[in-house]
Length: 240
Image (cartoon, rainbow, N blue to C red; front, side):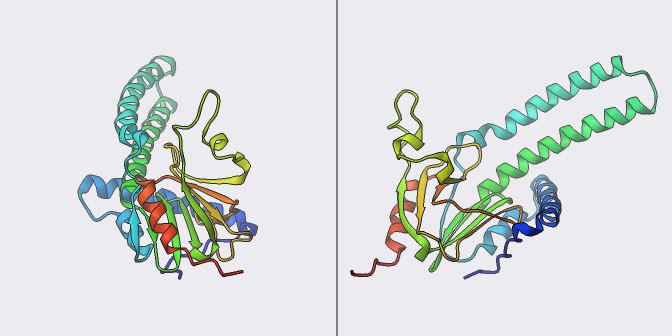
């Protein structure tokens, strides 16, 4: 049931896990951006294949994802020119000025690479409903594996039902502390309820195991088809 996925590192090794996870995320970010630029096979495609066989559900249509890269590229192009010009006037000539110029330029390139890799990974890495487990993935960093036997129910999130100061938590009678959010920038569209204890379920961020709460809030482009497919795949409840 692991489908070749690496087990998350226990939180008791947090320092080691954090360093390894950060290095891994940086490697994926630069590799994804470089391969995207050169038209080479993408790391995100290989990651998607490693999630195993099953029915796949995309999460690439978020409005924030659609504007993320153009917005970041434009703002960085403007900001870097203003910052470099101000720096040229404020800092006396010498090694310190050139070092600061280089640092600002690197930060701008890093920001663009981050936006490009995030959007690319979101486009290619999908949720997978397998024969025995549901795999929820958001880009390179967030991964969650839930055995179907550990799922109690599933429902779509009704954002339109919110009124006044309400949000979707209020609509569904939930508290934020009860929910693990598996969405980035765009709002989640599907709620998955876990059984008490959720045996065999795990979640990792940058390869580090993280706690799971009773509810999982998931972003998916078409929540109703995923809800129906997941509900049909759940094991039948035993007769009393």
